[in-house]
Length: 424
Picture 1 (cartoon, one colour):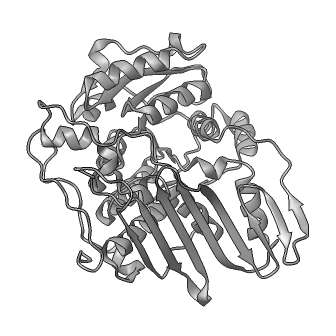
Picture 2 (cartoon, rainbow, N blue to C red):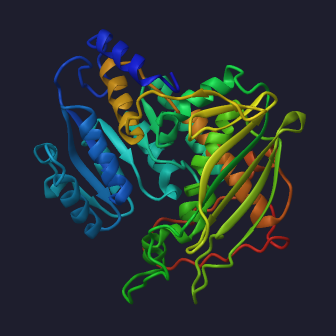
């Protein structure tokens, strides 16, 4: 069950609860506590923890891990301030794990782990969680390079064998009217899909820039504290942020990889003495069979126009899936979504914990890894200026991870130069 309908799934879960014993020892039907651990105490981690506790009345946050102690203290204060959740935050000092290997210590104390660190850490954290037999919620994207994607796919296969649930943070697949509209497209409401245009054109993210650096910080600490601006940590914003848009376009096109990608991009508006490494704009053409195309555009700059949409043109109609409205080729409205619009961030956790209680594992590894890889493929095309085939991208040996995860010296990665940066 890779993309269950929430209402149907929750109903079936309630009906079958009690039929299984979780691999971690939590009874599916009972009121047993589900011990939750948070790895990565940033804004998204705080949100995920609140949504996890909201999803199940007997879920309890029992452990947290982060590279930095100040992040942990801030996170626990924020989570405990949520109405009705303070009593279910039980994280004494001996379960507040600090350091680059803190995730290893946390895994012994939990049943479910929330992986919300910078994406560069996701593959190693996921593998450790599955090795420990833990259910997982992991934020998008799930890797920053092809070797990382392969590690994620292998870990998710192991999770299937162990009957562990793996949920991903592509919450827009639960954000009505999006899934309802995509279902109508797949049912033929606009005929054959010919062209998709996805955009994430917006302001700079809420990350400090220019990048702060204290004298006592090592190179490694400086880059991790400013993780968004480094490709080895964030994947670039086409991967870290715009993967949502790329995923929606891929979803419409049947969750299939493209044949090839060609694009352009650069770093132009975000100027500073140390501008980081990632680009501030990308434009990609993804090639699909039968001359179909997925055009993707993303940009981060202040004082500019904004657009965040997925537009689809078919042989019989057109639509923007975020609006939930379909028109025929003459412009006449032929369908409009009119159902409920629950919070998709909450829905994905509702589904996660219902799956655990029912003993019916969900594994979303395939499509989140695919969409992550397609975003990486677009970045590769932009960084190099080359036409990149799916085979080249998926089989790339380019490993962006550092030689070791230790505090100390770390070379400052260069900004790519299209036409000079080589494809590897």
